Every structure is written in structure tokens, then in C-alpha cells.
Image (cartoon, rainbow, N blue to C red; front, side, top):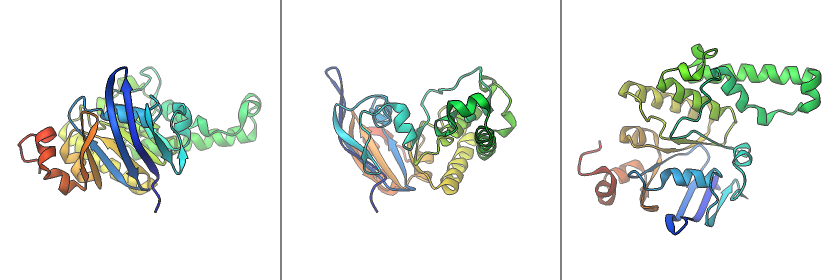
Length: 257
């Protein structure tokens, strides 16, 4: 089976500072992959390089065999890379339902004419978007907030809205940047269940950054450990959990089980 996403020898400099060095990644269809490492290791930079926020200094990025390096973020998203952000990227004065509906609009086909004259195709697609938006809100457990301003929601609910919005773009791979940041232990357990349900329902591959080892170890099939922009270890969870370099560089000396 060929890789869904292939990153080859990706290197990036900010001025004279090398932030990422010879980074490689293969993600297969439906695979859940984790990226861990200490603060400042370059994890979010890797997300930003792959999703088009930055253009890598060197290397290539292929999605289903197509080189997407250097494409604009909206074009990369349209090709199947959906993502959330470490810091919430929501419009606080827009309601929850409109957030999800808006994420569908890159997929519309009725055009300006259909919109202006409210054609049958326009009405049909708008109805389908609304129905799909409600399905996603229900899946992520935030349908009860559909008509509320997103800024009025609890933090954990806002996180789930952002994930629902990412899934509305119909991604082949879902990038999750610190999906449990700021959550309570109970919310963490709930998020694990939600991500498993999303994975099973949509068959989407998932690539996530996360500090909470319970979350990473329970969800991921393959884990990379990043330190100072370089991978020091990669493999299945049991190997990473017991790797001395990982324990020293990231996990400390405490038991992570």
C-alpha cells in the first residue's frame, strides 16, 4: 500500500536558525500517527510546513503522489489536509453552526449564478450542508450549542467545534495540534472516545501533536519523537515508551505507563 502522505528530507530555516532538519514521514490510509517532543522541539513548525503555512527550505511533501510543497494553505486543505491549531482559531462572534457550514463552502458547485438566483442546485446544496453540519456537531457532542456564539462555550466544547469544522472539509488526513490542551482528565477521556469514533466513522488518517502520554499511547499506532527539529526515535507506542533516549529527552525518569 502506497503512503497517503510522504514527507522526504524536509528541512527549514528561520533566518540562520535551523528549526527542522531532514524530517521524514510516511502516513498510510487510516493510520493514527503521533508526534511528541519537548516544548520548542519544532512540532507545530512541522505541521505548519506540511499544511502550507510555511514553505520548507528543502525537501518535498507528497499527498497521494502529488507534490504539495509551496501550495497555498487553502489549496492544500482542498486536497485533503484538515487541521486544528494549538491556539484556538475560531471566530468568537460567529455561532457554532455557521462555523461548520462555512467550512463546506470550498466544496460548492452552484457558483455565483446559482447563489444570486437561488437556483434549485443552490437550495439543494445549502440544505445538504446544513444537514451535514448538524451531523458533525452531534458526532462531536456539541449540537446543543448550534445557535450559540462559539466564544460563549466552555473551552473543551470550543476544541470540539474546531475539530468538527476541520472534518467539514472532508479531509483525507486530520492534523490535530494539542487537541487536549487545557482539558480536564474527564474531558481527555471523552476526547479519546470522540477521536476513535471519528476514525471509525470516516476512516480518516490522523496525525497529532500531544503532550499527554495517556492520550498518545492509547490512540497512536506509530509515534515519532522530535528534539531540536530532529527525530531521535520512532516506532510503535511500546517501543517509544521504553526508549531510553525518549525518556531522557522528553519524558524524564518517571514511569509513563
